[in-house]
Image 1: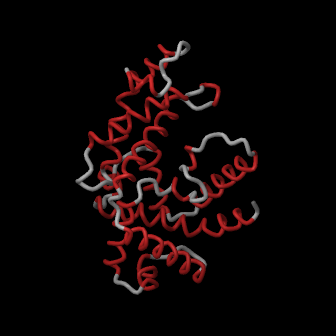
Image 2: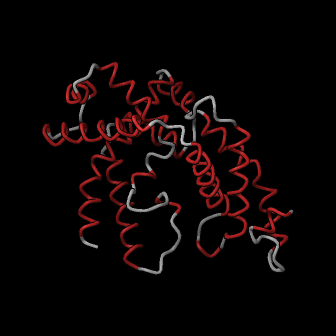
Image 3: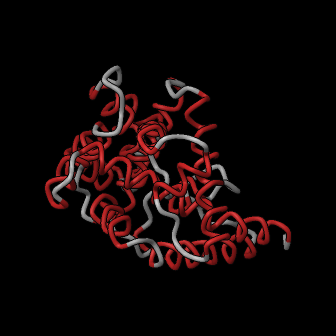
Length: 249
């Protein structure tokens, strides 16, 4: 129990409740770790993800406050995912070229949409980038494997994903966070139907890429490309809002 004590779980008050929360929700760690494995290289081991996820679960049990409105399972899921992402980032296994190409794709999508006044099609983005359609799809696949939480990481103004941020003493921070979530929700609603469906199945229904492919009747790799394109499309569409928001602070 040394690890648990170090996280402040075994204080005189709430010790039994916290211990029960950890035991009851331990299977959630494996469920989330397996869900993320579909988007990670073979070199990443499930056991490493689960160990990091358990740290997140212990932290959640130590910090959970029921009066905040969220259920413990929801709160713990956020903490578990965050701990796993932090552990993977320490490995630094994503080449810089992947991030660089992702930014290029996002910028190209935005340029096409600004010029055409509608959603950018795959071949148009490929032309904008000066590459073949197959090369463009390869970039999308690489970008998707390089970003675990594309939607959450759209909020580049902060250090944490948008739904992991703690309550701030500055009311302007809370207003900004709420405004971003509203703009993100609106941008998601305006995505092409297939991209919106993939995001919904992945983030809300928690299906893996293979399961989503079965639903849509396409390959797992194609689902990966659609997911990546949706996230990069959102990044481009929200870039102006983020810039204007930063300028008002």
